[in-house]
Every structure is written in C-alpha cells, then in structure tokens.
Length: 495
Image (cartoon, rainbow, N blue to C red):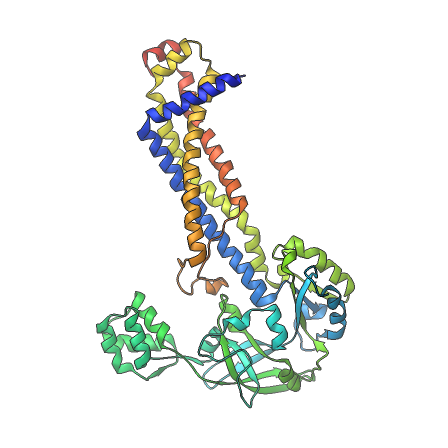
C-alpha cells in the first residue's frame, strides 16, 4: 500500500515528467482531445436527431396518448367507433384548470380509409375529420403550412376544405414546377450560374408536372446534366402549387356503400416525415360526417397532450396517468408512443446505447496510438526508472507514477476536448446543421436539419471511458518497465 505522502510526491514527479517530454505529451493530449471532440459532437448529433424524431412524433403527429376502440386496432373499420361523450367525461376529470392538471388538451378525430383522386394522380390515404380549434391544442401541424399554399382551415370555398401534405401534393400532381421571371431572378440572387440562367429563359412559364420532366427539359436546353447546387436551386425556386386544387375522395360509408366527396385544397403542410405527408389528409369533422353516415358522438380516436410539468416526453412519467385512464375506460384501448410511433420509441431507446458505442469505437482506435506513444516515452527513461528502483522506490510506486502520467495526460486532453465540443454544440444547437441533404432523412421520418443536444449521461460516459483508456494505455509500458532486470535498467539496457 502506497502512503498518502508518497502519492503526492509520485504525482508531482509524474507531472514534471509530462513537462519534460513535451512533444510526446502534446501528441497524447492532441489525440485524446480530437477523439473527445469527435465522439462528443457525433453523440450530440445523434441525440439531437433522436430527440427531434420523438418531439415531432408527439407534438405534430400522434400526441402523448391516444384512445381507440379495441376493434379499431385490428381492422381500422369505419364502424369501429366509440362514444365521444364517455371518453370526454373521463378526460375532463384530469383537465382541471391549473398547472398540476395532467392533461393539457385533447382532440377527437373521425378517421376513414380513402382513395384521393385528381385529374393526374391518385393515392390511398387516411382522411381524418377534426375540429381545427381543438386540433391546434394537441398538434402544431398548423404551423407547418407552406407559405403561399393557403392556410389552415380559413380559406373561403364552396366545397369542403382539406389540408394535405407536400408529398401527397406531388403524387397527385398538385405540386408542379414552373420557371418564371421572378423565380429565375431569385435563383440568380442565390448563386445560380449566369450562363445556365440565360439558357433557362426558353423554359419560362412552361408547366412540368414532375421533377424528372423539369430536369429533362433543363438538360435539353443546357446540353448537360445540371447537378449539385445549381439543380437544387432550380428545383427549390421553380416549385408551383395549384391554387385551391380539387380532390375527389372515394370511401365506403357505414352502410357499406361507396361514397364520393369532392373538396378543395385549402393548404399544404410539410413536416419532417415524408410518409406522414403522403398518407394524412385533414378535413373538418362536420364536412366528413355528412357523407360517412357517422354522428358527432361516434369517433375513432382521441389524441391527448399531457402537461409539460409531468415531463411527458419520458415514457416512465406517462405510464401512471395512462393506467388511470385505461382503468376508467376498460372497454377501450389507451395507447402511448410505443404503439402510436414505435419507430420514435425505438430511437428513444437507442439514444444512450448508440452514444456508448460511438465513444467506445473512437476511444478504442485512439488508445492504440496513445499506448504506443506512452511506451516510447517510458522506454526512453529506462535508466531513470532503474535509478529510482535502486534508491528504494518499489514496483508499486513505479506502476502508480506511470499510471498517473497516463491519466493526467488523458484528463487534460479530455477536458480540452469537452470544452471545445460544448462550444461547438451550443452554436450548432441554435443554428442547426444539415449534413445529410435536404430530404434524405425525411424519407425515414426525421428532420434533415439537426440540432445537436447533450445530456449529463454523455459526460458520465466520457469520464468513465477516458479513465479506462488512461489505465489500459499505461498497462503495456508498466509491464515492460517492470520486467527489465534492475542491473540492466540502471545501465539503460532494454532486457
């Protein structure tokens, strides 16, 4: 056992040895610093991506909890309804005014499976009847309306108004492409090459119903395949949405008969989830009830948004209120994020393990270089260690001194790395970072603009791993030093 007094002396010697071997000390510090910055930032990026997926799933798509009939889970039939009044009577007990009320708001929905058709396209969708004022309280979808495409149920039209997603608008050919004088000027202002812009003049005011047809026309007039930033600018600024386009929905009503409902597109939304944008269409509940044969008291789903004071984004905090509502409505089924958005729930579970794996791989790779550098630094001082042993320093004290050197170097590198990475994360958490392209992640239901996020668990993992790296990288040089005979060590002989 090393005495406390000796520990202080040995630590002091270790610190001085670090100062003596400045070049090798800098290499080790730099290695661990770069590894820590890379590991911390990548982990923060992954955590931010997972958090955004969970947030978007809850606050845009499915809320914290949902109530449905048990039969609706298996077939989603139009007749699989339940009494809205019965559910309301239970939920209002948890919605008393005040900060401690567990339920913030709830919204009732009527949902039918339908086929959406226009003159140029068709698609299978879910037609959801909502009360817009109530839906705004549980979903921020109304904030996702694309500027210039309309509004969230405030357009004036003789036909029922619907709100559809950007991807569905593309499939139904409501979203087109048209180059005009105005958007060509915007392209030039944002960096489009003047030669390409001049050639695009011949394509002005021609309507292209798909991106492929637009790109084919561009290739024909430019004589080349336009790529990179240029094609991205042309696509972005040439998008044209058909104003108040007409869509006909066909579906089976409660009597089993085929019904048709013609509507006008009042607004087009775009979320981080391409599949949601493709499959969900919203209509006023009263407009949908007229054609389905359903009554206002018969609904398919109730979405529930919980109070933020409960920290409801954590599933553990949701379960008590979920169980209470379920016991009050035994004939119905209360669903949480595990059922309503299993992909978001799986991302939530993956957050910590993925952070651990990323840091483990990075530190494993750099530990080989650090171990080699430490061994070289120690072996150059064999004679010094031989002299220390000859004047009475024990093997345990030698072992502690080398271990202290390794831990001090790695601690310095890790602290600098954490400090720099925290600054980078703070900046990018406000600006966001797009490293995967504008739409590549959206096809997986995630936002392409990622806001990195750090958690206390991340720093705990870093502290543990840097400690392990410090110990492991010191084992090889310690073993080599202690295996050398004392007589040879005092002469500086490596045997």
